[in-house]
Image (cartoon, rainbow, N blue to C red; front, side, top):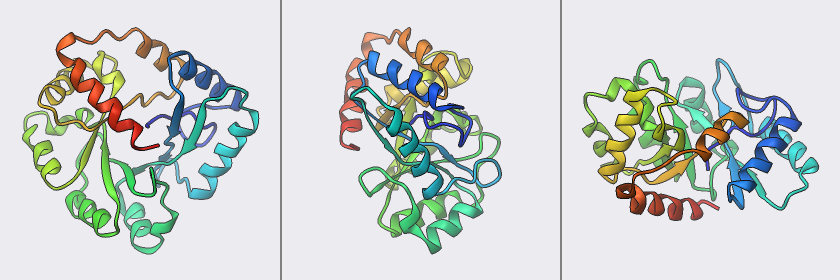
Length: 223
């Protein structure tokens, strides 16, 4: 429910061939359906519904396996997103016409973050915050994520955060949030084949198995 497999429109797959290699690996790992979520980030990847669906159709036209491929987006909360939400919410790409995947800068929180989350809900969408474990400016106040949950925000764990791929601190936070049952969904956030190869090697402690199973079941509800 969170990956960057569509080619040439963000920092994920560069070509259709890259996409097909990744999709073959997803299939080999046991995935039957995936929802691509390219960045919509005004300063770097100013994607639109049109650019994302064009990339999706391009891959689908070359896809030979029976894996199901859909597309939504991972929206950076910034002024451009606020304009999109306010003026053309029908242009937002969501899961099941309801769930909206959002992210923040890794450097500092967005000034109007909670107001925007509330506006998302007022528009009838359910916000899902991508990879909260990676926002290290909240590392000393993880109770903030409980506050967000209480306000109706869902949280999505990156599978790679269960390794030291993003650093030991992110790994520590991910396991803390997982043990406190704060996550709702699990995504790969894979940008390239090397990420999927690393995910294949992950070994998860048995004490987390029930929590991971719950997240995977929740994922199914997004398709």
